[in-house]
Image (cartoon, rainbow, N blue to C red):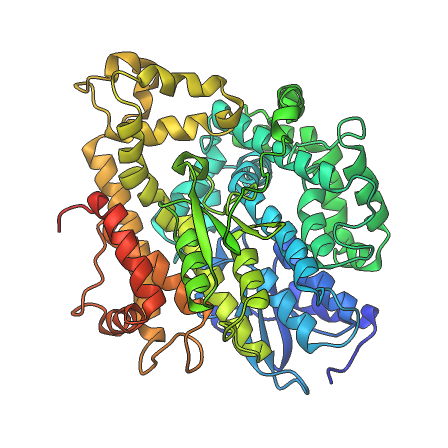
Length: 602
């Protein structure tokens, strides 16, 4: 069993690494004995892993990954975490725990909970576990809006306060990062990453999500059951950061959330998972943000204003009834399962293939593709499955739940390490979708579907979306996608002249396509390497890892990426092998029939 160490010793041990005794990325990211957390103190995802380790009362090594200089994208770190994010975790020569290298916080916390003694964070009951996972997916969904808001409303002001010029900031960035990330960071310094309209939409979406949490905490001290679980550990670190982002959570508007945060604040893992230095910095960002903005403006010579989230609160609260409307009523069905189906979604394909593999009876009900625009992580529980009198939301929650409650062979290995490896692949797919694939898919396929719906005769309906509560938090994004197919010669242009600044030149569109094709090709190369001399991604049988990646790759031809035998023989053979299975074959044929028309010519 893993040896436990007093917390004081753990904190001192971590501090030694933070001070930079280990220099150079090759040395810094080398494999160490023990449990090693590749960490970044400001990251709520990394913090929940620290909190889990504290709850389990074990010691660990800490390697601080410098997100400010984009160290997470260095080749050395990408060998540990191909998603290029924090956290990651390695285990080497720890008694009672298998050696492994894992990434994505929810994967890591579940693995640690399954192999370490101490408090049990994940419920055993499938329904309670599904409820906990739903809150995890709710938190992941926040990243669609929260991360971009965090960049411009916090990081931008910090880097201007630290660096006196954009040139000195650019010089500080890691030389190995991709050009588009260097450009993104330059936009942050310049304050041009988001427009005023975009940041207002992001803030409104964040507050809308809080309304769901506020309702979920009605008359409750914890999110699931009557005890502290992984749901609380997952949700709280992100929500606590709202204050730092310029998004205050007032007791008048969110009394349940404020009570909840106050109660959890005194739990040791929450207090001990942050250093005193970071705690002081967080307080400064919360209460002295105007000073940090002033310092940044003085040093950079620019005049930037931090966005105040309270300016949109009235609009959010005015739509509170609509936001909390229980439109997730159970639908009548004669089958055991009912899939809420988005034909433009890989996630729904995964659900149906799993149900077929398990031999479960199911039907589906069509859903509007526009719901998913701007929400690649599926925030708001958009991916749904009905099982008898239960409604389960969130793709990975649904897959885990179906795998647990239905008959047939499990598509997760029983071994904790192999199961975690499957979940890493699922996280790999989700991150690929969020950071790379969805950007091209929206511009090349969703834009076409929008033009099929909103023609010159119905363009007024498109313009009316900005006044529709359902679309008010992503109207700018919808218009940006629509305008990718508009030119000044287009019949609809005269109706959309106010959005003419969103029209991209052919050169700009080609540059975007080439950039994201290059990133996705890197993903395919990683997959090809992983499948060398292997029939399946994890172990010797089909798992949910294979289901997730296969379904995503079916969409690649729609964005002009073809997986050929010549370029990717291992991937091609793997896909062909999976397609021979009855469950995969049936859903693949249906997909090709319904979505084939959006495939561009080779």
